[in-house]
Amino acid sequence: MIESFITYPSIDPIIFTIGSLTLHWYAIMYLLGFASVTFLITNKADKERRLWPDKQMNDLLFYCFLGVILGGRVGYVIFYQFDYLLVEPLYIFKIWSGGMSFYGGLLGVAFVIRWFSKQTNKHFLAVSDFVVPFVPVGLAFGFIGDFINAEFLGSSTNVPWAIIFPTDEHQLPRHPLQLYEFLLEGVALFFILQFISRKTNILGLVSGSFLISWGLIPRSLLRFG
Image 1 (tube, rainbow, N blue to C red):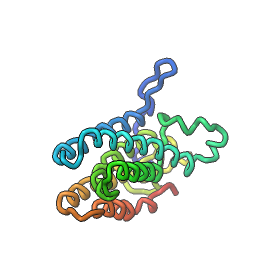
Image 2 (tube, rainbow, N blue to C red; image 1 turned 90 degrees about the horizontal axis):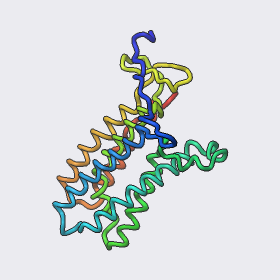
Image 3 (cartoon, rainbow, N blue to C red; image 1 turned 120 degrees about the vertical axis):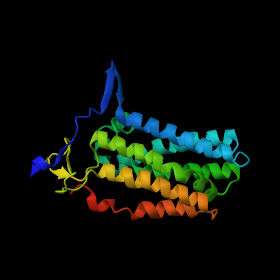
């Protein structure tokens, strides 16, 4: 019975528009994610001042964020909107309209960490292990943005908490996949990685745990279908 399911709350993805300036909730989520990650990483760096001088930390944060934005956007357009890109090439620059790929962002950050490790004579895995525990924070805000934009829908279901999204042309009750990912890849994974990073000094274990944990989440079973 459709009446027993949840109707998507009326959330306008646009906060306000002034002239040609339009501010989207999606952009705000990314800014909040960047701010939160910056705070947490800076706080950790303060406790390891000998290993992470201010300049190195500022450079690492700046280029990682650049890697997330450029890699995430390029990855999304190539993986999901390539046909649209051929029609409107400037679409790749419209980050504020939503659409970022985790895979692209991951590759972008991996490239930055590789470059940074060479510039500072640090081991790639040492830098990766330092950054990775805070990645779920950024992911969590990104999933909230996905929910507000009503994109990346889950498969149809009859569970009581299923949501009917306005962007679904079939108007079927679906798993709120964005919220599942927020809880699993954001909240749960953050605490798992924090625990591992504080309990071990094995090089690469934190980075490996992130990739394995992320890969074990059965999101593909709930994708739009």
